[in-house]
Every structure is written in C-alpha cells, then in structure tokens.
Picture 1 (cartoon, rainbow, N blue to C red):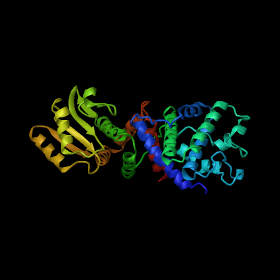
Picture 2: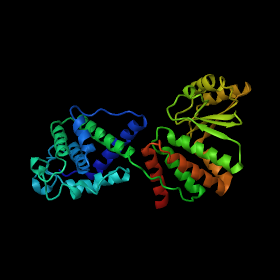
Picture 3: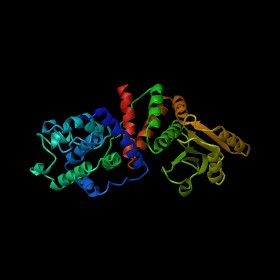
Picture 4: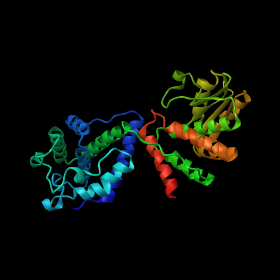
Length: 361
C-alpha cells in the first residue's frame, strides 16, 4: 500500500504540536528503550541525511507494517516504498516550514542510486558510526508492531529536531505597515499560536510600551518571566507599571477563564499585600465568569479597582487611538521582544508564520 502523504503530514503536524508544548514547558520526553545513544549519534553527525531519512521511515512504518523500511526505492521490491517522494512531498517541506535546519533532502545528498539501508551502503559512507546508529534505529522500528511505541519514537525524533532548531538562529521577520483590519487578523492568529502563554504577555507589553512612547509617559514597564512565581519575582502580576517608584497598576495576562476563586486568591496574595489599588486581568474573549465580576465589584467598594480587559479588543482600540506613529512604536516593541535571545525559537517561528500569512493575503 502506498504511503498516504496527507495522513503523514497530519501526523507530523499533530505530533510536533505536542513536541513544542514539551519545549515550552521545558519537559523532555524519554527516548524509546535502547535508542538514546543511536539518536544522539545521528543528531551529532555532520551528515544530516541520517536523521532526515529516518523520519520518512517511521512515517511509512506507522501506516503500513508490511513496508520494508530498508528499501526506499520502489524498484527494490514489492514491499519497498518511495523514500525520495515521501521526503520531497512531506518531510522536507515540514522541516522547511518549521525552520528546522535541514538539507535539500537525503535522497539528493546521500542516498542516491537505489541504495538499500543495509551493510552494503557502508561503502563510501563518511560517518560509519552514525550510519550504524541509523540502521540500529531502523531495527528498533522493524522490531515493534506497537503503534504506541512507533508514535513515541516519532515524538522523540521530532523533539530532537525541535531542540536542533532551538540551538540555531531564527531570523525574525519585520512587521510591515498594515491596516487596523490586518492587525485584527494578525493578533488573532498570534493569540491562537501555542506559546506557553508568552505571546499574549508580549502583545500587552508592546501595547503598553507604545502608549508610553506615544504620550511621553514616565512609565517603567516591568515584565516578569514566564513560569516565574509572582512572590519569588517580587511582582504583583505578570506586568507592573510604575511611575517614580510608585505602582500605577499591575496586570495579569491569562489564557484561562477567570473564576471567583482566581480573583479572591489574586487579591489575597498580590493586590492586598502590595496595596495595589488598580489591578487588571487581560483575558481572552469570554474569559471571565459572572461570579468573578461580582467579586471584583465588592473589592471596588473597599477601594480596589479590579477590571477585566479582552486582550485583542483592547489592543485594537489602543492601536486605533495612538495612530500611525503609535502603531510604529508597537511594531518596534513587538519585534524587539520576539527577537530577544532567550525567546524560544518556536515562538519566533509562529511570529514569522503570521507575517507570511499577511504578506500572502
């Protein structure tokens, strides 16, 4: 049975979403039993073909276990598969699309002229140890019919590719001059991207920076790191705006629904101890429960302002208000934040993807 390229693309995309979530949480998956050393060797090798070819093999194995993954040319036998076509149609475009360092393709660079993935190909192979490890990984795939083990193999393989990207340089695309309507689509797309909560925070910080610069405000805008406890960071929220050492307001940026318990705990842990009179929750559409709003009104009677702002709408209204010059300041701030050395490469790729969509439209 020929490999279904659409299904292979979908499997890669779905698995890679899980891999990027692992990276953003700083969680590394475990290599399948007995494969860690072989995986490490093919990723340490200067010959990219081994790690790229193994991806096509695992995709073929995941779909049809009767395929002989050591025969990547259809003229090699009835149970062979078209490794070059699978690479050109699925694997290489996936690597390119996700900005993962890669070659033009293993079947152009290394595995030409109907080679078999066996000992006979050792002749002329520069990195013999890496090729041996490549064959060891093929043996692991051949030795299991368990779909869960094959999926775990693919997940770990893609994690190593993602980690390879994290060690590379991803050039951040510049945001061109766009209309408010385009900003709406652009921000919506960014908000939908998986970022471990980083992108919503960056959008709010960039908008606050644009307000400060446009109006010439004496604001110091402090933003704590993602996954850093507020108490440990000495902050009242994700973002704190100060003037002359005094807190103007603090803000929490969240993708989760705000319920009453969240408001109460935030008040007790952050607002009251730090005597913050103006506190903002930046939320997604529909991200606040009715009882949370009731609780906020009760705090208002005690002299504390607790308000909820929908991120995308607030940013759009801000950008409309501050005009072209202010929007230029927003663009510069976003690019500076996205291009920070410690920003995960996956976030930079998501940013570039949204700009590509703008340009294509």
